[in-house]
Image (cartoon, rainbow, N blue to C red; front, side, top):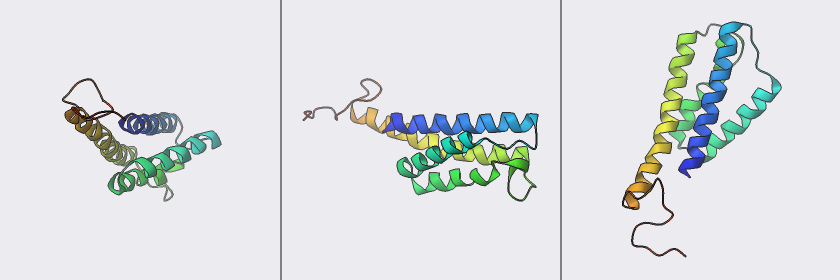
Length: 122
């Protein structure tokens, strides 16, 4: 599961980077329908794979994606980056925590093992 979570983290990070880069070049930038389709998939994955705390942090970023960094039109790049950083930290910490727990259960052999050390695979 940690690989899935890290994949979702990367997807969210890539989407945010794409949005922010385009916004910095054109403050009237509106993401494409394809961008929103991929964002919808990422949102669903976050809801399925992460805790409610991480979902809540991620959901704070969503309304900021659009012209003027939010529906009020008063968003700032700094506020977007700060909100995004909080969301990414929450997602990453949960993805890595699972990996570290799995490695500990495996006696730190390899990145992730399928069964705890000393148990038989079925």
